[in-house]
Structure formats: structure tokens, C-alpha cells
Length: 590
Image (tube, rainbow, N blue to C red):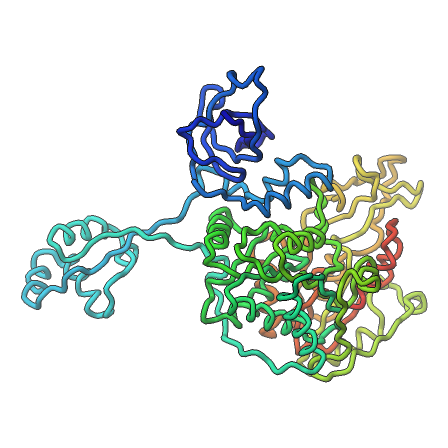
């Protein structure tokens, strides 16, 4: 009897060995099974198979049942998890939890079902009149199908008590009751206007041909697509994915931030409007039901295009033909909590294991990607012109030290920027302001003794958030109440130092009282669909000034924006990080 190493579902990291009896069937790595666990039955995922040690093989408890004859994890994805576990020095079961989300492993999560009323026989006029006299609600249900000219409708459409009415009609042979699954779509309520492929310029056409050629090449190399902002990289992605879908293959599109996902989904669902269900989304802000349905739609092959941040690299796509990593340089592709992995690097590895093409796109590629391109490991394609023929923006650098000499208030925006914003508002144009620091004040300091309130765990200055009236550590998440006196010398002169997006929002509302101003940062993004709603309102010109952190500096496209102001632009240079200069350059360029 073979042994199976099984990851048992639950909060604890239980990995146990079980025997495989002949009646269990074809148990393979990636299969879901039922196993005995103390005095209860549990479910788990098979990690590996092996021959048990003869000394203890008879003591192994047997697997009770094979839940699904087909593995939920393909051999390729199991290889990916094994490689990642070894390379990033984490337990294999932690990577398996990335491949199988908790909602997929939970027993209490299932498809959402709804009852449907199906018309089996249309009543005659005499039968309908008789029903109106004896049972008017039964007659109304039958009459609904005559007026709606359809054969099926949800039971919920008929109001309370409809189930008993439907059962009575079913007993008379007029209707039948059925159950059907309902796909919980994260984009419910969104409208997608169909779009047509745009005519590519020469550089875009060359990039598309290079990607297409790499998809069919015998020895595939990652393609580094380096294109200036506004060069039309997304249109190249769309047409490359369209070719993949037409050839019967699937595609994975990775974006660095969840905030970018709604815009990317909108573009792809508009382009593939005839098959909207073929585009799926995977990210951490989905509800359990939405994640369950999207994951199974991807695994079953109904959804052949997947869009999401770094965790989407584990999407169970079948017959993968193309992987696209947009803004490949972005630091958010790195997972900061265990298991720590790099989404971009795993995407390149997955493309290698799946024998498909991978495209890394960016206006400011990372230094390691540039090095790989210069040494021939990657194929380099450049887009040096904007797709619409427009010139790159004029950039002005203003020294805020000179601005502050004639000001008594907070020195946040320069006079030149204030006048420029006024002109744009008068013309009905829109403005984006970028400040890569959330919160109200970056620290609390005592002017008498110089004490700065720091995090108990990280020793970093705590940032004050006025909306919550809390001090927060942006590294570990620690929270504390703001002190009213200095913890060291008990002085009451404790002061707020520096400024973040919350304080700038307050200043901007005082400076431009008639403008519609909205803030976008990680605090706002905690609310489900908040960022998508804000960006849709900004696109519809319901917002005049959009203030945000780096979330609004990545791949967003708003034609009515004619001015961008970057506040405290050299802020990122003073972070103790060897990549500080590189990341500041990338952020400002984006």
C-alpha cells in the first residue's frame, strides 16, 4: 500500500501521512480526499506519493474517500509550487495554500443555487380565466410567461409565497421547478461598451509580431516590452491575447495593484464583449463566493483570460498560451508576508514550465530585466513614441525652500502649481496630485526634548491618521492612541511633523473650495470596490482633482487630465533602501 502526504484543511499547518487503500481509487498529487483525523473526518489535499517505510506502514490510517477523481492542482502547478517552496525556503504546504485558496478548500463554500420556474404547458384562455377566479396568484404567475414571452424565470421574481404557488401549478402540469447555479460575478452592475481593435503604428506592429513569433517559437525567451508612457502597450496586449483566444489557448494578465484591476478588466471585457464570461478576475478583495466561482470558472475552462495582481500567477488556467506582466518593475509584485515570493519571477518560471510566451511590459523596466535583455536572456522590444503622436509632457522642478520663504502657513503646494490648478479648473480640465505618503502627519515629535513617537516593534516613526485618530506603523500595522503629552518629558508642546494625503486633502479643500476633490490611498482602498468607483467617477468627470499615493501612478488613462503635480517629489530618495533611487525614478516617470 502506497502512502500519501496530505495537507489537512484548517487554520493549522497539519501535514500527515495516510495509506492509500485499493478502494480509494486513482489518488494522485493535487487530488482532494477525505481522511480520518482523531475522532472526526477531515478533508485535505494530496501533496506527494511515496512508498512507506515497512517499519510503520501498517500503522498508517487509510484514506476514506477520493472527493474528486481529477486533481485540482495540475502537475505543472505542483512543480511550480515545489520549486517556489525550495527557492524561497518555505514549506510546500504554504505554497499549496496559494494554489488552492481557502474558499476552494472550505467545505462550507459551494455554488450559489437559485430556483427557476420553467413553463411546461401554456394554459388556454378558459383555464386562465378559471384560475383568476379561484387562485389569482397562480393565474398571475402563468400570465407572466404570456406577457414576458419567455419560458423560464427566477422564482424570486414572483415575490413572497411564490414557492407554494409554483408547487401547486407544478402538480397541475403547467410548470416545473428547477435549480441552476448562479455565477457570482465581481463585475455585476458594470456596463462594458464593445470596442474594436485599433490600428497599430509601426513600432506597435513590430512588438505584436515579436510576441506572436515567440508564442510559436521552439525556444521561447521572455519578451521585455519597454515603451514610454502612452505608447499603447495595452493595445498590443489586447491584440496578442485576442490571437491566443482565437487559437484556443488561454492568457494570464498580471497587474501590480488591485486598483488597476478594474480598469484592465474594463478594457478586456469591452474588447471581448461577445464572450464576457471568458474574462475572470482573481484578487484578495473578492468575496468568498466570488473567488470560489471565478476559480472554478478558470479551472473548468469557461474563463480563458485571467486578470489580477501577483496572486493571479497561481490561477488554474488550462492550455496557457501567453503570460503578460504589466509594470513588471513594480515592487508590489513581491509578497511581503509568508510565503514570500516574487510574482514576476514566478510568472517567468510558469511560462517556462507551460512552454508558453511571457511578456514583461514597462516604461521603466527593473535593472535586472534590463540586464537580462542586454545579455540576450530576454528579447528586447522598444516603443519610443506615443501611440497618439502626442509629445511627452513638459516637466518643471520647483524648489520648495524658496517657496517657503514668503509663506506663513504649511508649505505644501507651490504658488505656480496653485495657479496652474486654477487655470485647469476654469477650463473644466482635471488634475492629478501625487503624494506617496498616506496619513495626516508623518510623525509626532516633542520640540522640547526632541522625542519622536516610534513603533514598539519596528522602531519607525508612527504616522498620525486623523480619520481614525490613531498612530499607525506602515510597516507592521501596529496602532496606538496619540499621546497628549510627551512620553519622555511630559511636555504638552507635542507637535505633528510633516504631511500625508489626509492633510493635503484638507488643505486642498480650503484652497479650492469649489473643486470636487477625492483621495485615493490604501486607507480608502480597504472598502470593497471603493477604488473602482472613484476611478469611474473621475473618468466620468465627476471629480476635478484626484489626490493619491502611488496607486494612481500606474497605467491609468484619463484623457481629460492636463496637469499632474507631484508633492515632495524626492520623498522616496531618503528611504534606507538600495533601490531608493531606482524606485523614485520609476514612480516619477510613470
